[in-house]
Length: 398
Image (tube, rainbow, N blue to C red; front, top):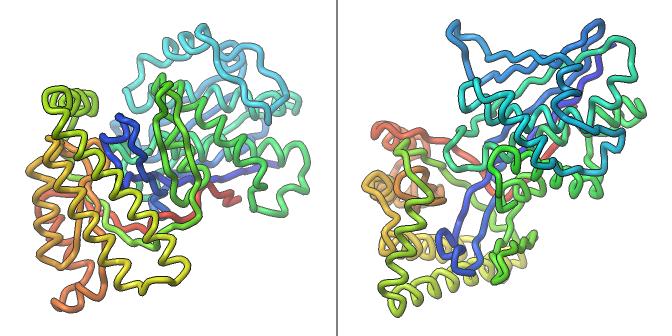
């Protein structure tokens, strides 16, 4: 009998603190609660393979990209697997190189994902599966409206959903009674997060850990880079209730080049740029205070929303001033303003994505709807997605 585990995890976006975070200023990240990646893993009887389906990556025949790896090969690629599924094990350089080399011939989107997928499955699930009579595995990966490769944490959502589904399947194989509940025990979230960070290492090399931490725990995170180069995360409970449109301008950008450009500006005019970063920090701090006041009902929702919109407008102007804007992002903001809404870039800028905070009352005041706003943005060639922010992180679905 086949045993199945399914998990989903959200993408993330940055509300405040882009670029300033490089200089020690805290940034605020939120889970894109409705834009997620799901991973299904199940056992297959009378089989000796791991069969992987990337359902959003279509082959020449319009079918989901399918990669098949024998379990024997899986064991060769990932050395020294144990049955300690709940003890995350970081790959050494030899394993990283062997995995990268093995899948280098695949298209980039597939070749980048396979090392993480193979490593996590080999360590978490395979040691248990290999004790069963002639049993293989099948994995299916699917986006639930989360754009891939748009700087919204899609790889982290993939790794979080993957590690969570692996642990879920491991537990079902270990003790079938664990299938009775789909609530993830709190103590497992830290383990899921560490496994997913390992997946991120295999994809990106030196990730900050922000994306996978946001995707795992959900809600809202405060992220700061310390003077010694380490990263500090605070999971926040005072989450502002925001609904947004996420707009992918589809304008390609280089995060590295944008960060370098800000560095040049900062070094040329430190007495000008440093106060801008200080202002961005004040924006972040004020947003957190407003979020707490809203949660404790110390301010009316309309007043709190108006203050957050003002912070977004100021932050966008500062980001343009440090040179990370783009005409496409200006178009998003202009259209949002025409509908009485407020927007800003999110992430590195220079194209990429923007967010628009939905204010239903202001839309109604001009006899417009969210769909009217969305359609105006789509007419510019942008992709538009609606999501709440700051909601649930990783979930077990089956």
